[in-house]
Every structure is written in structure tokens, then in C-alpha cells.
Length: 143
Image (cartoon, rainbow, N blue to C red; front, side):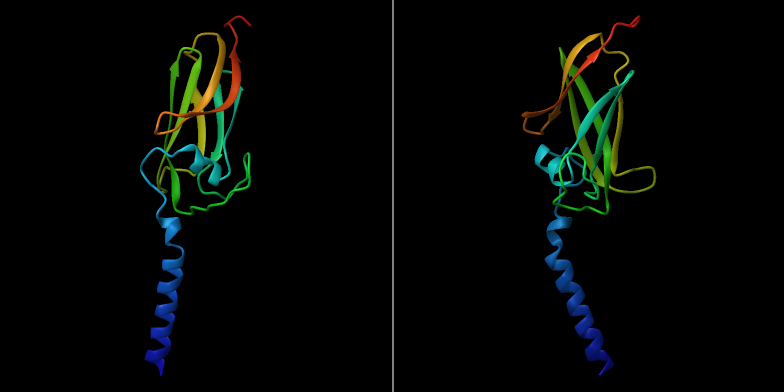
């Protein structure tokens, strides 16, 4: 009788894992697209002196700009990259399994070496398309 109970519990566990497999199928270790960012609660940016404060949480446990539709308890931010081209600042998020030294939150970007001016901050998708996050102005050093 005990073997039957253990077998049933094992079968239930396998069924639960199989039903939730789509959560495990989220790409890990690669740049995520805007659809993924929205599914985990969105992203917003604010300028604070020489930094862009990038607010996002890839675990999907926090509403940033919209209510999350997916949770990833084992996922963290591998890299928040940024590049500048003219008056555009492009951000991308790469994810990985969360581990020592990683966080589910995006963090900040140092823009202190960017020249003064107005910039569009955009999320850059792997396919090259973009999503406008915010327009920011970097003042001259004496302002």
C-alpha cells in the first residue's frame, strides 16, 4: 500500500512539473525581448545625476509599469547592457539562472561619459526593433 501511495505522489509531482514546463522554457542566458520584459512587469528609467536608474524585475514578482503575467523564481539578470548611438541610448537585458552575486533586478547604468543633450532611452530587441522608454536630458557639467 505504501508503494502505491509513493507512486501516486510521484505521478502527481511529474504532472505538476509538466503542466508548469512553460515557465522553464523561458529563454535563459540570452537577450530578452520587450514582450518578455512586459510579461515580468515592465521597465521604467529615471535619470539621477550621472546614472540611469533602470527599474525592472525579471522574476515577475513586482509591478513596474504593468501587472506581471509570468513568474520566474529562478531567473536573474545576467547583464544590463547599454550603448549610445547619436541621441539614442539602447538598453538590453540578458537573463540567466539566479545565483550568487546575481539579482532579479536590473540596476543602474553609468552615463557620466555621455555628452550633454537630449536622449531617447530605448529598449533594444534582439531583432533590432526598439521600444521607447523615456526621453532624458543630460545637462552641461556646470548646470
